[in-house]
Structures are given as structure tokens and as C-alpha cells.
Image (cartoon, rainbow, N blue to C red; front, side):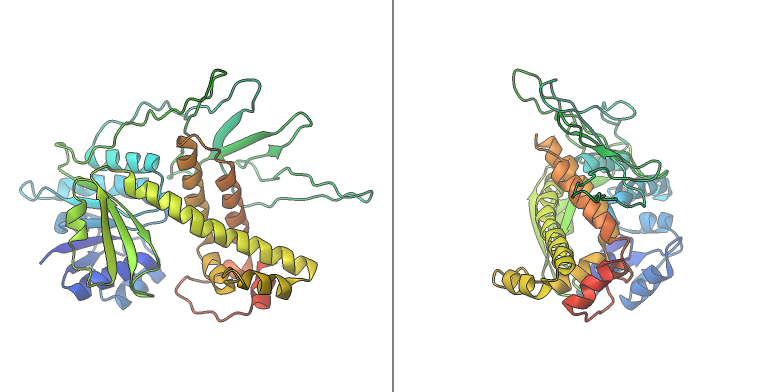
Amino acid sequence: MVIVGLVSAGFMGSGLGAALRQGGARVITTVEGRSARTGRLAAEAGLELVPSLAEVVATADIVLSVTPPGAAVATAEAVAAALPVRDATHRGLIVADLNAVSPQTMDRVARALTGAPPTSVPPGGRPVSEPPSGRTLDQSISVPPGGRPVSEPPSGRTLDQSISVPPGGRPVSEPPSGRTLDQSISEPPGGRMLDRSIAEPPGGRMVDRSISEAPAASASTGVRVVDGSISGPPPSVRPGARLYLSGAGAAAVAELPWGGKVEPIVLGDQVGSASALKMCTGGVYKGLTALVTQALRTADAHGVLDAVLADLDRNGLADSSGVARSATKAGRFVDEMREVAVTQQAAGLTPELYAAIADVYADIARTALAKADPEDERNLTPAEIVARLRG
């Protein structure tokens, strides 16, 4: 019987674990240091609890990492730190990172797990710049708790587009000659700082893709790394989520007993491919939800909510229940949208669109609508939804 270790058994992780357990796998996890909610979800899924992450790593044939995007690298480092407890004859562990991260972050995950040296990115990251005729973009996004004031003087409407964020945040100013945007991607201590560099010289466009290919396995740890991404809700909510996989061990994860509740799709041997796909599709799905959310809030402010919903419904976009569900996960969507921004920047595209969508989710996360768990059932009318989005 294959033994699958889960890190961790949150809403998605417990749903995947339940599907595998029902398919015939032995599924183990630990709730050491986790919340009471995680313990409850693991119990409801019928998962086998072990005392520590070290025991998960020592026992499992395959470990699935299912965490918020901001915890992906730290989780990989914790798994790597637990590797010495494995019996020397029981090597060949497969670790599948199923988190919504950029290919660049997936590279860091793979290197942490395999013991490969880091890429040649200097401490503090790399500057992003364009020639003097263009703009300068410092690609470091940091949005701590705070708000964005918009001022409207009595003489008429002027939008002060400065985002006023407490220390550690990021000011945005727009001088008369053009726009300067400080966009920094960072996390609190214990997390990670991402900084990617793209330079565009006067003669044309150059995209720095200096992050080398992530190792699939390493003689130093014996770990085979699988890059994975999930598209769809947990199978405990609705069967049929797609699990995209890439890397040398992808087939082994695809062949787990998913019991028809998850559809595994192998994209190839390249670590980073599954993450790139997730950044594209997740960016569309969550980007659309952010747009609908902002449209409903604006319609509410102008007293035209019902008319706006009726028009959106003509094109299948009036999913106010989706707005409510997404609000409960808005906090983790902030990091995911920043990862999309990094991915698009590495493709030579502006990161500003998804930096702005990250701001939208950061704002939603501070509202009353976000104060629930994703598994909680809430039957709210559109009017109730927008009321809870006001604060």
C-alpha cells in the first residue's frame, strides 16, 4: 500500500487526502503546530495523525505539500530538514509541491528539497529598470495592513493615487511627468523575499531569464521533486479538480489512487511547467473574481447594483456567491497574485496588473465578508455581500 504524507491538511489538503484514502492509500499527516481548524478537517477526512513532520517524512513514499503560496519555500525547507530521519535504505522520496507559486519560487522549492546550490541572485534581489526614456520599476511588493485613502477636495474631484501604507508598505506616487511605481514583493520574517530582474536597454527588449533549470533530484538528498498545481475546488466539495504535474516523478503522483475524484495531467519532465500553468489559469479565474467584486462594490456605491447584476448575468458573470467564497481566501490570494506578477514579469510583461489585483484582495481580506472559513456554507444575497464588503 502506498503511503502518502500530507503537509498540510487544510481545506484543500484534507480534501485530497480523503480522496486518496478512499482510493486505498494510507494517508498520514501531522497537526503539530497547526490550528484547531486543521485538526478538525484532518479528523473529518479520516486521515492518520502522526506526531511530527519528521515522522511524515520518515514514513511516506510520497509527500504532498499543500500550503498557502507564502509558505511554500519554508515548507520545503522544513521537509528537507527532516530528511536525515529517513532510513538510509529508504531513499527515493518524492515530494510534490502543489502550491500556487511562480516557476521562480518553484525553483527555490526544488533547490531546498534537493540540496542544490541557490541561483546566482544577489542578496536583496535584482533591480528592474528601463532606459531613461521609459520608467523605472522597483519590483518589490509589500502590502502590510493598511488602507488606501482617496481624497476629494471641495473644489472638485482629484484622486490622490498614493497608497498610504504603514511602515514596511509601499508608497505609490504619480508625478506630472509620468508614473513612478515602487512595487516590492516581500514577506514577514520567516517568509521569503522575491525579487526578479528584467532589463530593457535602449536598443530593444531583453528579458533576464537567468534562473537556471530546477534540479529534479539530487544525490545529496535522494529526493525527486514534482511540480504540481491544482485547478478546481477540493474533491470533498466537488469531484473533478485537475492536478497538473511536471518533473521526473510526475507519473508516480499521477498514478496515486485518486478514485476518479481528481484528474491528474502530466505536462512533462520540466519542473516549473505546472506552476507556470497555474499562474496563467489562476490569474484569469481569480482576476475575474476580483473584477466582479470591484464592480459590485462600485455598483452598490452608485445605487445600481440590481441593474449591474442583471447585465452581468447576460454573460454569465453575475456569480455573487463566488465573490463570497473567494473573500474567505482573499488573504492567501494576495500572495498568489504577487506570484502571478513575478511570472508575467519573467515573460517580459508588466507586473503592475497583478500587483494591483493583489491590492484588491488585500483590501477584501480586511472586510467582514472575509471573516469565515472556505468550508463554511453562507447563503448571502448580493445586497448582503456588498454590505459585508463595506467594512
